Length: 443
Ligand code: SF4
Ligand code: SF4
Image (cartoon, rainbow, N blue to C red; front, side):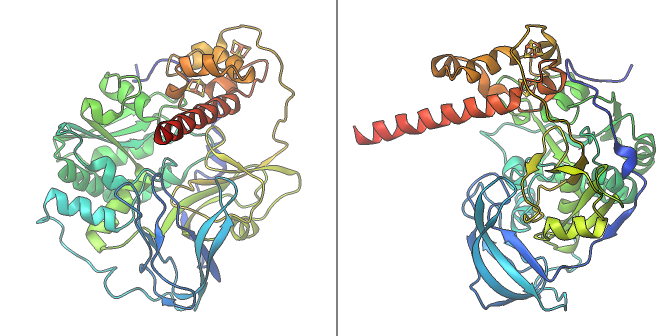
């Protein structure tokens, strides 16, 4: 029996649309919009001024603190503006806008082969930090922070998350079969950076060719194990992949680090390899462009900051598209305009046709959401207290344990927008806590 976790759902995979399309480079656009906030944590601070000329790989935004990441130019050209632009998270956020000079010239101090084998663990982490690498599965947490020892807790297991459980997305899969060796080398670098003795590559069973390639690539490495997991959403979430693979539960409110585990996404692992092997900062990523609304689905290597509208235009939009999503359909972000740009966390661009729009109804207490919740929460209760704006009940609940995976919403026969309601509840909690802090500061 394949390893898996408790709860979860089986949405239609829809991966066949783009799965067989090899990664192709997307041409550098005439202009890129590099947001200073493409990660969890403090936004980067501008390191250039309007009118400056920049080269590929040059820092244009300095990290705004330890929990932050620098931003690098993805094309060469001239800084046209530093101004707010529409951001995938909503609203406008500060960005460095670069107009291309068409030359694609690299900065002098990057993109050179180097030997990382003699580097210390902390030097490896520093190199990852300098390269601006963040979690590329969508979480966008700065990778150097994740790899840094916490309270002296040892790391035993380093897991490369090759589940790619979100429907439609195939960017990780293409990297698994096209860049197998780079992923294995990246895993070895990550093991060195953390001191982990055990390396794991965890793959959902719908990618048997990737499994075979990893087994062949690691046959001489007794410290690395390749495991196949059941196809189930959200198999790729850190808590679920840890539970499925290692049979260990992460405590409520905790992190994999609390039990000596670190999980890294496939694309992040390739970025780590490229940073250490070639001194190459994170300036591009593989994006799956797909959905029934796209004429030519594919997997594209895209310069960061490329406008989403330009990618959709190249892929060809069909009639009837009524929903645009960045990321996967379960946890991705619906967009109201294609005038946003690709960030470090943009794994997919989905153009959906006839996306279902439902009226939602009262909870009928069927319990399906409870069975589906991989975190053993009671989503129906959370949705009811949030809908009622019952702040006392929200404060007393375990709402912060909700990972917004969308399993509950997916199975609910009343079509209740549970994730949306939970987001509202979390927002209320954040507001109350901020008010409480302000009160304390005034006293
Ligand atoms: S969105 Fe939250 S409440 Fe719903 S299934 Fe996922 S973790 Fe549970
Ligand atoms: S699945 Fe929907 S209707 Fe059923 S208990 Fe959960 S919230 Fe209520």
